[in-house]
Image (cartoon, rainbow, N blue to C red):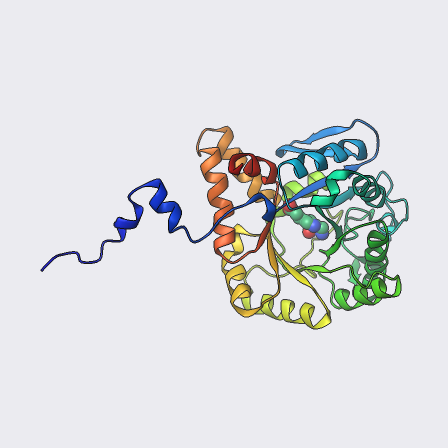
Length: 329
Ligand code: PBG
């Protein structure tokens, strides 16, 4: 008897053999790169907790877009950091809002032909209190008003589509926002603008560095009454089902690495195009280890991205998009 008859190592013998039998692939076209747009000119302000990530004025963001296009990156996800904030977050739907102007500038470049330009839709970067919706106060108590918020989010989605967003991506987690946005988009003549819903978004500690980058930390309380409890897988499937019923065209799962099981479950259950967001804390955590020499940067970066694709994500929003695209060539 020959033992062992099955030798799985036969297919691992050389780089060429391994390449032939590789099941999951990374390519720059499946990466989306987040950009944080701020006022001013020539501004490139590094986010202290996110090495290599910057707040960019629109002229600088245009340069980034050109670089991303040259690297073959699939698209951009735009966030705004306005100078002025108010209770309602009116900057989110202002025709001359920071992202609206950024979109027009990026869409005017040749680079934009090969990039899908996605606008994040939320109020938290625009509200003085930092919540993703309208706050109703009653003495000591407050609550985030769902229905008043979705009306404003829908206005923001229409305004961003009119400014040139190829896709709008609501990240607020209010109930009914997808239906409200579809209606507002259609009414604005934007029937062809897809909605990429952050359908399953958990209340996560891993958003910490983003809130520094986007200046969107809630001034009181937290986001647990709208973002999901990290313990709930079945509820995540209900969120997705609901968003699909309301008209979502694509799904975005978030965060990625601490929720790979949720991504896999969603992939097995739904056929919509689905991405995952490797969020700020996932990036910062890896960078902290790189800085200490505790992990090999290139290998750890690629492995983290591969795990997300293997879990079932078609595309990945990642702050590593440029670095990974350079390695992948
Ligand atoms: C806005 C929004 C957040 C992120 C994406 N959109 C922050 C939050 O919900 O607090 C986080 C992205 C990241 O951490 O990289 N609601």
